[in-house]
Image 1 (spheres, rainbow, N blue to C red):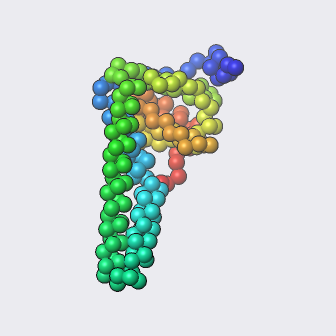
Image 2: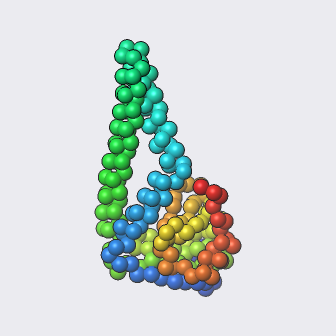
Image 3: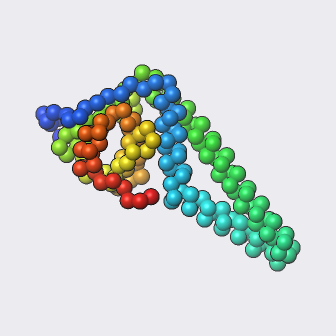
Length: 181
């Protein structure tokens, strides 16, 4: 079945493309990890689990070994959890950066254009024309414009070079800015 948005004869507005350099995959990996990990929700999740782990360690040792020992075990549990999360994050970042380098080699092109009801996005990984109504919000995150899908956790990071002030204003008319994070 053909997507009707792709067969329309309506011309694209604000069509703009950007050719990436060799540093682009690293910049994309940093931006996406920073956004996901350092959002208030992401930090709260990690801290809640770390605190729960420390409390469990404390409660399991306080009766048999006393409060001072249990506090030490709880603090070690908290610190150990934070170290494990940091290691997992670093490993995940390295793997993601390598994956992006393979999928987005230097010289690849990103492009963005708009119609009345859709946004066209082209990248080395995919080409899609998606209705604006599918997006919950957009925001500028460093060197990227981030589009957040409504019904999923999909985030589209597009190079800010694909946008002009006028195209960002047009996008703002079509997709709301996010609520405070």
